[in-house]
Length: 376
Ligand SMILES: *Cc1c(COP(=O)(O)O)cnc(C)c1O
Image (cartoon, rainbow, N blue to C red):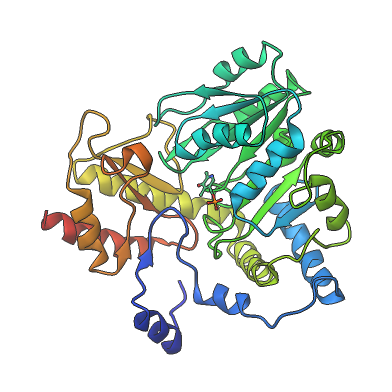
């Protein structure tokens, strides 16, 4: 972790900044902010095109794809909603296992689409067998899946689910990897899925307001047949513009600069090292929880590697504490942790290790947590 410059440290202190260990947005480095503050350029000029042309192969390598990776000036939900508008003509199956994935059913219906939910208990993953049963009815032409359900800290087995695509080639597989992309390998072409998307304020550790996504040729062909897919999130427009290293409308050029800087960091560190770092710091967080007598909220074997959802009474077993008090005691030491999301607020709490966090920075968090625990 780079030491902060005096000026940056002073600025953060003057604003009363609390270091973010919530699972998004996550802490943004000084280096990333500096890149974000690059002087403005025109988005139809050669400078911007050169910038996008430089990062495009890095994004393709990151996602293991030959497809173009698109830049969307929106949070992840823009592309999540856009996927529904672009790819659903018959009926969509929304796989639901937590707050974000549950919401996707509501969003599908708000877009005027026929939609069914495949609901499992929060903390459980989505399994291929259950999806297979639903798709076998022939009712669906699309499904949505959240790879890493951030509200419950649960990761569904993406490869196992993606393998179903071979059995149902005409169903569009739309995958949200908002809080997992860059933290573990997700090989788009090999998985054979149709859409992969992520917002950049999670594991990318960029400021919020930007998303990246890619589409299969089949998804682009399907989108072209849909009449009311709108403009701002029209996948056909994204492809047409990306071929010229551009975006349909004026993008957040600042985010593009920041993404450029971040991608250079990823490849300097090495993707494998980055993945190993997330695995290690996540294991350290799980160990911290177990050491203090807690159990983990997700079903065993399906825990996220980017955050830890600690059980605090939502499920039987393990210790419970006053989460609001824990948050307060940790905050006084300069760290913001999450007190649980939606219906498991207070009965779980979440600690993020995604983005730039290292063993050293995580140890600072555990020290603050230890001190807080001693006062509870
Ligand atoms: C944060 C998150 C979202 C929503 O992202 P926005 O940036 O708020 O649009 C969607 N899916 C997952 C898995 C998330 O973690």
